[in-house]
Length: 96
Image (cartoon, rainbow, N blue to C red; front, top):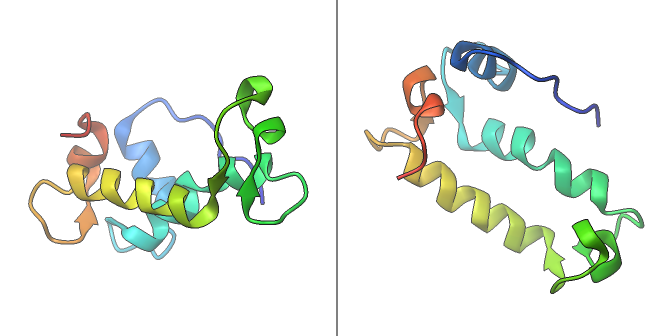
């Protein structure tokens, strides 16, 4: 999976994350975009980041499911209007 390129404006994130072009980011699109780091760190592709795969080579193991649950909570905090989609303003705002 390619590493997402850096963007310099909130609309840049929307354009890159909005893979279906509907003008907003769904939970699925958010998980795909934000989950790339887990996939890159999971060297043996077993769905578990073990201590040696984590930054600094230490810490408690993290499952893909737990990582996705954490991202889902972040998405829901960002989705201020509760419509299940993030627009450019919600993407650019710090999580609540």
